[in-house]
Length: 318
Ligand code: GLY
Image (cartoon, rainbow, N blue to C red):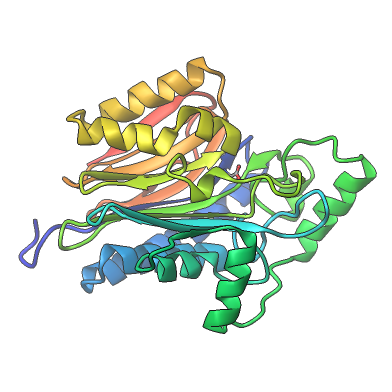
């Protein structure tokens, strides 16, 4: 507790995948994550509600072209960008989201609007109607690097199963990845909220549905919140976000819930990562993939997960 309420906490991610090749790459990813964590922490210290902070954090990550969400999203097999995003309020235990939406800058803002609607999860056509109804400006999220990546893949007849986790010249050609962005916060009122947004796996079949707009990839109760990244099908098969959060809600501590759930995922040879926090302010992360691009603020210090060794790893911060 602080003199004016609960100590705010947050953790964010910019995806998981195989190794970041260049150290320069890791350093610049770290700088991006720290800049965003600091901005959202300041917002929480100013008293912003958990949902507002999550939406703002997701917007900043969606606007950063190196991450696979919003601007900089990967292309699907037909060369189109289709994005998915969801928001869950832990206090209200309410989920909202959009699936395979196109031509919008911040898909998370649609999820935010849908929080208070009777119909809270929209697929492609419904999302397009909503965009028109809300008069959101038209935005093409395509970047040159993602287009080059797709053209390269097209030459090889889409033999690679996923696009790069981070779009950077020095990495894009050699780094298979599972990009997504996510934000989990605890606000001054002790409320938890979580948001997740993605451009999908990249090169996927038209109509494929991501985990990011499902409780498998983004889930919260009043007790805890978790956002996942990695191969959507693996996350869905483990129902990972809901699995961790339900364990905490049933009485497990956050670290135990992460250890059990990530160990099960590892035994099942899944390729994924997760970040989360609980109502008491404990922060945790875990992965089975080579790297997890996450950063957090404990109220005392900033930290990140970029230097974790390969394979199954779990970490916590107070
Ligand atoms: N986790 C992002 C996706 O597979 O769509």
